[in-house]
Image (cartoon, rainbow, N blue to C red; front, top):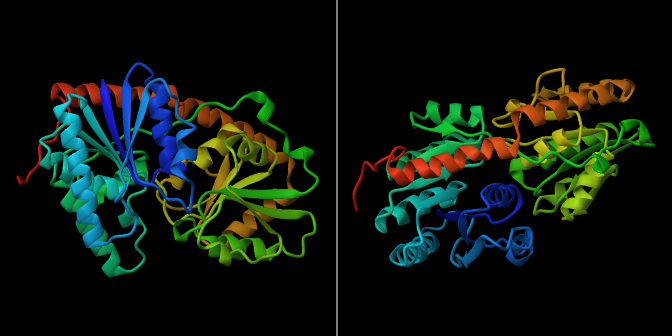
Length: 373
């Protein structure tokens, strides 16, 4: 099969998701149509992580993250041209759209090009991010609009699926997965001299650096407690507590090394699809302390491999418990590893995507559009 992946953003968790799909299906050809966010990571750097044998790239030059009617019309026109050209050459068996912007423009472009075998994976839908009523209404209407253009919506967590069902949008879910980490990357928390709390990802509103800073600030007087944020972003200015270290973007090997040597992985996100960063922490035998939001809630068995929190106060209380009972962290970390291996195995979970591609190719999984152009 030839699968066309349309990707914006071509960075961070979405890029990891697409890479894992290409690795899980080495006998299929993958053509990745992508934008670029230079402020996060250059596209050439992201491409280096992909297999060379079965992956080809096409630049989607007009794709932008923010909503801009004129630029979005240009992006739609360019994407339609790309898909029409690939279809004429017989290079389209299935189209897989990744993230909200690709999901809306991609379904419209595919419909215009006469391509009906389409899958859309939100990986953290934009309507989950809206904090005020008007923005929430706007993003929800965009999702409803997109759903009427055809294609099958495949969420990556049960809680994300529930959010779509609450909108009255039909969807299914296939859980994200990850490869088990090699033993040499795994360390006991007892090896640390300082109690280390780590997170990773783009520093922006979705990841809620203000909350991270508030939590870290409580521990300023603890000389043996440190907080590490692996990543970079426009909201770095909010991380002002003097016990926070911001590393910038690092290689995956270096990220694994830092997370493996930490005591607790924390996420302060406002919403997620199903975070690959948290999955990596689970595979590295780390207890996780996660904000109680879409995506995160699917990764924690409360009190077993970690905890959920609803406020900075709850997070601080849990961290104090971990700090004063460090022997429990290794036990919780072992449960994290077991949960990751049994519920989030990439080879097992991503086989379902290939079956779905085959299904829509045969017409069995096809969702017809409700509107025509």
